[in-house]
Image (cartoon, rainbow, N blue to C red; front, side, top):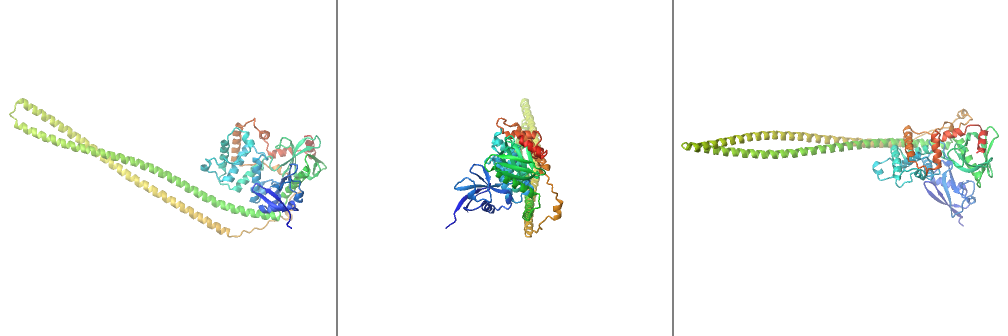
Length: 587
C-alpha cells in the first residue's frame, strides 16, 4: 500500500517549490529537503516561516512533525524560506554567493513592502544599486527609453511623501546608477547590503508585549546585536537596550519572557500578549545568542573550508574582472580613436567641400576669363576693321585733295574720331589682357593649393586608418594572450592548508566580550556620502508634510540630533542593569 503523503509549498525570493512529503515527516525532514534543493550550505541563517491558525507569524520547529504544527490547514501547506537570523556584518560573515543573493532579495523585498524602514535618500541609493544588479552598467542610449518605468523602484511611503513625479524619481535613481559603472552583480548586492544593515530596523523581529509594572503596550525587538524595547509607535528609537554580552540566560513561562543578566540576580520580566509568543521569542533569542557567541569563537572546519573556497573564487573573479576591465579599457580606447577618426574624417569632408566650392569658383572665373578673351578677340577684330576703314579714308583723302575745303575738314574730323576709337579699343584690350593674366595666375594658384590639400588629406586618412588597424590588431593580440594566460593558470590546481586556531590562541582570547556596537559606525565613501547629503537636501524641499509617515518624522529628528543606529544603541545601553530595568518598567 503506497505511503500517504501531504503537499507543501515553499516560497523564497528566488523560487517556489512544491513537495509531497510523508505524513509523519518532521520539520527537519522538510528543512533539509529545501536546503538540498536550493544548494544552501550556510544553513544557520535560515528557517521556514509560516502563518499559524491565529494568523500570527511562526517558525517551523524542526523537531515537530509537520502534521502537528498549528499551521493554517489547507490542501497545500504554505511555508516561506527566509533568513531567520541575520549577520552582524555582511562583508565579514556571508560566504556563498547563493546566500548573498537570498539575503539581497529578501532585504530588497522587505524594504519595498515597508517591512523594513528606509529613509528617502537611501531608498534612492538602494534603488540605484538594484538597477545595477538588474541592468548592469548604465547605458545612456538604453536609458532614454525609460528603463526603470516597469520596475518597483521605491516604497510607496517614499513616493507618497514627496511632490515628485515618477519620471523625476527615475532621473534621481539614474544619476546614482551612473556612479556604479564596472561593479559586478555580487559586488553591487554586497554594497546594497552594507547600506541596508545600517538601517535602524534591519534584522529585527518585533513583538507586541507589555511591561510587568504599568502593563504598557511596548515593542520588544530581538536581533543579532541584542534585545531592545521601544515605544509602541516608534520602531526606530529604542528606550532600553541590552547587548548579548550582558545577558546570562533567557527563559519563558506561558505568557512571560524572562531575561537574566550576568553579575547579579536582576531579571527582566516581559509579558506576552499572543498565544505561544513567549516560546517564539525564546527560540529567536537563544538562536541569536548562539550566533552571537559563535561569531566570537574559532571557525569550524566546515566554515574554514567554505571561506577558503570563497577566497579561491574571489581571486578567480578578480582575475577575470581584471582581464575584462583591460578589454573594456582597450575597447573604450579603440572606440575613442574611432570617434576621433570619424571626427577628423568629417572635418576633412567639410574641408573637401570647401575645396569643391573653391573649384566651382575657379571654374566660374575660368568661364569669365573665356568670356573676356572672346571680348578681347572681338575688340581686336573691331580695331582691325577700324584700321582698315581708316586706311580707306586716307586713300580717299589723297584722291580728293582737290575737293572743297569743307569736305576736306569733314573727312579730317572723321579720321580723328576713328583714331580716338582705335586708341580707346586698344586701351580696353590692354586692360582685359591684364585681367585675364591675373585671373590665369589666380586659377593656377587655386589648382596648386587644392592638389596639395587633397594630397595631405588623403595622407591623413591613410595614417588614421593604419593606426586604427594597428590598435585593433594589438587589442586582439592582447585578448588572445590574456585568454591563453587564463587557460594556463586555470589548469593549475590551487592548494590551501586549512588554518586551525591553536590552544595558545584560545588562551590569548580574554573571557570578556566587547559589545560590537561600541566601535560600530555608519560608514560610506566620502563622495557617495556627499551626494547622498545633497539628495537629502533636495528631497527636503519636495516633502509633502501632510502625507508624511511618522517614521520619516522620527528619522528626520534623529538626523537633526546627529544620531544614527549605533549612536542610539550606545546611548540607551548606558547605565547599569538595574537602572535600565527600572526604565523599562516605567515606560
